[in-house]
Length: 89
Image (tube, rainbow, N blue to C red; front, side, top):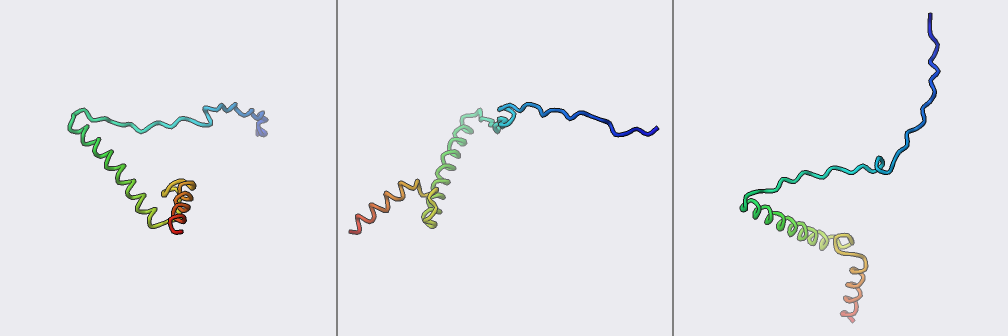
C-alpha cells in the first residue's frame, strides 16, 4: 500500500547564544626560536618589517595627499593646514 506524506511537526528554532554568534577565532600558532642567534634574527626582522611599513606608508601618503588614514587623523591634517596658512601670511 502506498503511504501518504508524513505529517511531521516543525521543530522550534534552537536558542542561539552570544558565544555562538561570535565564535572566537583561533590565533595563528607562533613558534618561537630557542637559539639566541635565531632570536636575534627574529627581533631584527620584526624591527625592519615595522620600519619598512612606516616608510612605505609615508611614501604613499606623500604621493596621494587625500588619504587621511595614512597621513594622520583629520584634526592633525587641519592643524597642519592652519599652521601652513599662518606661515604664508
